[in-house]
Image 1 (cartoon, rainbow, N blue to C red):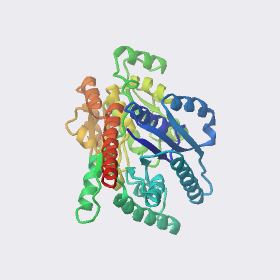
Image 2 (cartoon, rainbow, N blue to C red):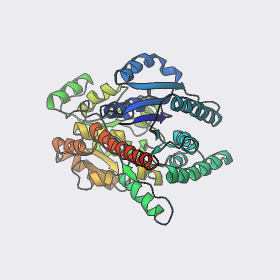
Image 3 (tube, one colour):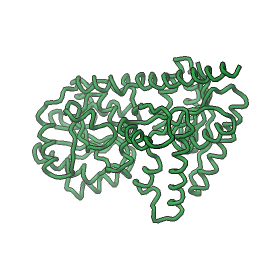
Image 4 (cartoon, rainbow, N blue to C red):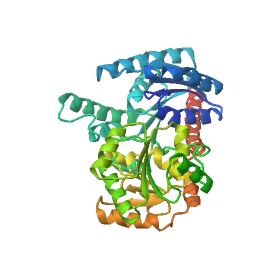
Length: 413
C-alpha cells in the first residue's frame, strides 16, 4: 500500500471538499493507503475545523490545513502556492511519501516542482481544462493583459504537467478523447484515466412516494402539483434565463407546476429573474448537503442548462450524479461532458440541442408523459457514479503506480 500526499487548493471545509474529496480519501483509506492531506481553508469556516479534524483522524488521514488568501488577486495565489510548496517539502522530509496526488492545476505546479527536485512521482488529477474554464467563464477576461499572460503561462504548464506526470485523471471520456487526438503527433505518452464526479448513493437514495409526500409537505407544495428543480450554485456557467424560459413552457402545459431552487447563493437574482419572466409558484431554499438529499425527493424533474464552450467537454456536474441516484430525470443541453452518453436514449433525461421554444415544449411533453422509470435512472447511477466505483478506479491507479515504483527500485538495487 502507498503513502500518499494529497494536495488541494480547495478547502475541506467547503462543500466541494466535503462531497468530492473527503469521501474519496475515506474510501481509499479502506484499501490500506495512508494519506497526508494539505488544503487551503477559509477563515470563515473555522468552526468546522474541529469536527472535520476528528473525522479525518478517525480514518487515519493526517490533515495539514493552511489559511487561504484571496487578496490581493494573483499575488495571494502565488503566496499560497509557495506556502504549499514549503509545507510539502516538510511533509516529505518527515515521511516516506510514495507519490503525490495533486487536484487541479495550481497544486500540480507544486507537485511538478517537487518531482523535478525530489524525483517523487505525481498524479495530475486535472479534473477539467482549468485555464480554459477561467477564460470562458470570464474569470480571466482576455481584455486584461495580466490575465492573458496568466492564461498563456498555464497553457504552457499544462503541456509540461502532461509530459512529466505519472498518470492523468480526466472527469470525462469526451475530454480524454480530445486529449488523445491532440497528443497523437506529440511526445506526450502518459496514461489517462476517466473518473467522473460521483456521489454518496447511501445518502442520495431512491425516491419513494412516502419520501416525496413528506418533502412536498415540508415545502408547503400541494401533493398533486408538478415540481421542477434546480440544485447547486447560480452564475458563471448556469443559464438562468434559459431555465426560466423552460419553466414558462412547463407552466403553459401544466399550470400547477412549481420551480424549486435548492441553492445557497443568489436568491435575490433568482427572484428578480422570476419577476422578469412573470413566474409564479417559485420556491428558493438554502440547504446543507444532507438537506439537499432530502429536498430532492420533492422533485418530479430537474433542469440545468450550462453555457456551451470548449472547456465543458471536461465537465462532470455533481448534481447529475446526485439527481440520478435519487431517480430524478433531468433536462440539460448537449455537449456537456459525457451527458450525451447517458441521455441519448432518454432513459435518464432529455437533451436540448438548441435553446428554443420548440425544443423546450417537446421536452416538457416528454417529462409530463411519465415515461421515466426512477429505478432505471438509479441503476445507471449505481453503475457509473458511486463513491465506491470512483474510489476503486483511483485505487487501480494507485496500485499501478506503486508497482511501477517498486519495479524501478528493484532494477536499481
